[in-house]
Image 1: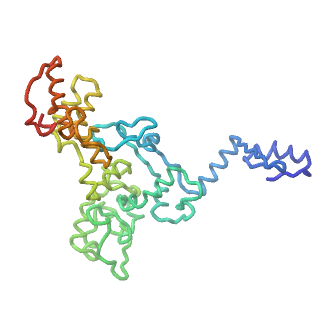
Image 2 (image 1 turned 45 degrees about the vertical axis):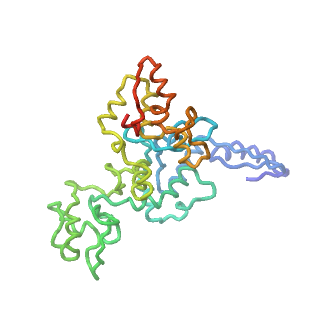
Image 3 (image 1 turned 120 degrees about the horizontal axis):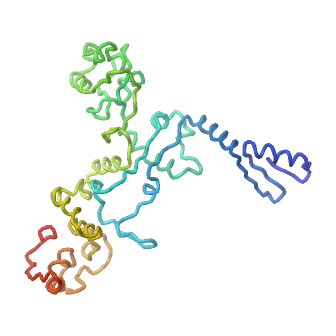
Length: 351
């Protein structure tokens, strides 16, 4: 609403006292265009209800949004650059950054029926922009969980976990009267109708369908995230899925710490009666992700790879902690008084 110098004072006061406080409108006053934007609690509730009805979807739930929005690398300090040497093993870390999507929101993302909702928009939020950017990774991992079978189309939707793309690869027969999954379920016995399945599908497809368990009671069909045991989409499960798909990702990011030491050794490490910072330091040494000169050079940073103490050998973790003459002197003069020839040790794990 716009106000000019000819606006009657009584009208101006009425608008401010009633309209502005009722639904929360924008009031422009004077030639300078000063803006007074005032929201009342009833007006805000009304606007939220209108937006909810237009979107046909509830709000997104971002668990641990602060941790999911900000990526901090190990050894990262405020105002300083950091190098990502290796990913932390999620098996030994707490906290899951989970993105829970309402079924109506998933339906919008899958079908694309609401073009106005699926667009990025002019000023999208960080969460909505991230969802649209990750839609290519999200949609291939979604499949239907069998309930009643009323919402699932046999040849168009993905609902078979053991088949590629979760879809049937045989063409749909002409004039086939069965198009929904519920048409292949015996409503009395709660079992697959093998007679109908064998008429229109191949033997391999029938075998794959028979592996799908049916619920003992009537329930709705659900959209599941295939790469999570619970069927709920999470950032962690999507990250591991994308890493496993990319050959370079599998080479750079091993799946667990078992490739270095056994599980019992890792449990012994985390249970040692020492400060946690020492446990983390040993973990980094065993994974060879300590920021020594040799590892820094591998990150394509122009530094001298030689040891700063002896200047004769490459500064690796095992050299700096074991093989260097300065390190051997420290071990001997320490309260442990360890005197030994460690030059035959070639790795930190062996030591």
